Length: 520
Image 1 (cartoon, rainbow, N blue to C red):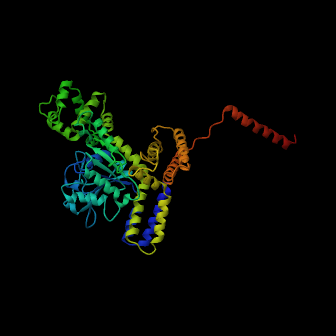
Image 2: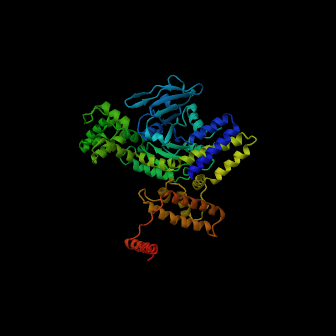
Image 3: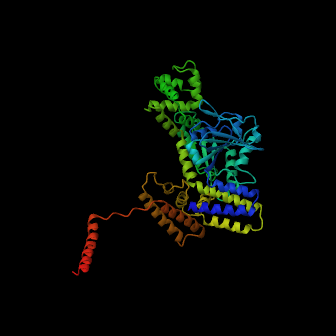
């Protein structure tokens, strides 16, 4: 289904570009190229929310600047490239390369003398496998003291006269402020979202600070995130809320041997000395700490991991983790990053094709509305045909409706099930059915067949009103799509007795035919 949608959108863009054949055609051809590019996911949030740190954690390399330098005030794209390359795109003039410099494993970005307000964007190409599937965009903090800095993010994600350049957004918030809700609302209200979808994930960032860096901080953060997920003001704007300790995730994914050795040394201290040392960041960096590791190295560890990360690493080593790789995996898992990556894959990556198609459709729709011209009727009709025939877009519309006004189903349990079946927890068959990841294809087929039977019955029931029946029909089509996606069950092999019974008549028929040919 998705392949057909992309092909139809490609034809629509070509027809619209031929009709306009001017600057607008250049934009339309850019959208056509986007259909073949990775999904564009922006990372946004207020100042000091931890955007660059989280981006580094996702990439597994420290290539996004996390200090307060000038490069954090401009929009920076991270794309896949076979070799490292950094390019500056100025407001005026041609793009030019920037030097690629690293210090202690970190990429050093510099605007090379260009004022930030004269920079349209920076593009970093890097050989990170995850960038083959996603183009990540780091944006300046909103609600900045500098209006110009905030405006760069607003202009990129919620432009007034063009569709958003990002297909989806990961929004970081430390608490649920009015500024956070206003931004998510404006992103949803852009032209790119009026086609009916929710294409944002919220991250409770710096989640270890929720519990003041205690070893159980992520449990406390999980409780807060669960409350936010059900908040009536946030639920219509985000597909989920995930707590993430970004600094721990970034440092764990780039863990060094000497850092593992230091954490192991702390773990070997006797309990009273260890607890006194880990009571606070100041005590940990104190010159009088009972460990043969210099204060400078300990301060460097604090900068890399934070006090929560150090406490967590020490606890894991004491719990039996004996090598750097095992410690890195365990810390990443407990940082919340794995949960975020799973949600990114379930909600964005599996929908990548139709999220990109939706962005292109909105671009065509906006062009037709703002620049009408003779001959546009055919393009408009084609646009409506694509929208009407795209089940993926109807799913997104239903999901948006479920999270905003609610679905017109009298049974609340049925409404909740419908939201999940159309992809509320992810677009994969098992996520839609609420089955575990290791569920067999046979279990998926059996569960889907039962759901299909139930929703067909609802759709055809004489007591189901028109609005509810339309919802049911979308859900039925989603269930049919799941069945089409799961490999068919193999034909059962006949039992030995049945095989013999089938073979014997065939042998008898062969002997009879031979006798006829021989005149027997």
